[in-house]
Structures are given as C-alpha cells and as structure tokens.
Amino acid sequence: MFASLEILRMAQSFAAHAATRQQAIAQNVANADTPGYRSRDAVSFADYWRATQSGAGVPQAQLIQPDESPVSVSPDGNTVSIEHEMMRSVEARQQHEMALGIYSMSRDLLRASIGR
Image (cartoon, rainbow, N blue to C red; front, top):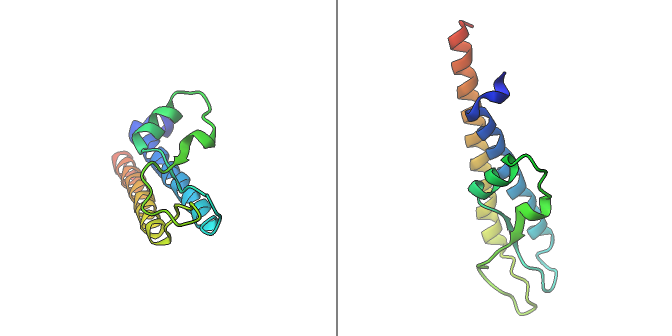
C-alpha cells in the first residue's frame, strides 16, 4: 500500500542516493594517497531517479562516476581533496536527513488521516 505512494518512493530513493554518495566519498577518502586515483561522485539525483525507476537493475558502477571537475590535482595525478570530500559528506548527510524527514512527515500524515 505505502509503496504505491510516490512521495514515499521518492524519499526512499533520495535516501538511497545519499547512501550511494557516501559510498563514493568513502572510496575517495580510502584512495586519497593512491597515485593516479580520480575522485568519484554519485550521479545527480535526477539521473539516479531515472536510472533506478526504469525497472531494470542498474549496476552500482553506473551510479558512481569519475568527477568531471576535480578541485585539485596533486603531482602524482590524484584528484582527491580531503576538504572537498568532507563537504560532500556533509551534503550527503543532509540529503539523507531530508529524506528521513519527508518519510516521517508522510507517516505522520497517514497516521492522522486514519485517526491514530
């Protein structure tokens, strides 16, 4: 029943997108000292939504892509900036909290509508 509510599906997808972003950020931080490593980030939420709602399973590799405009490039070719990854991590956390807030408000509205 609740899966058919578009707002709940979108909130779930928004939370999953934030988790995918956190995964990319964790990989970047883990490879911060790897020569030649290119920082990566999740695709935009709009692209993520289209890809995951098509019904076909989308490989995780297509949802995380190399960063097109790296903040900095070190002499060894690594494009990871720890400061930039910290900012991305905060953004991803805020996205996740927003998704949970939407889900919580929707739940409260449903409870109020059935009188609980």
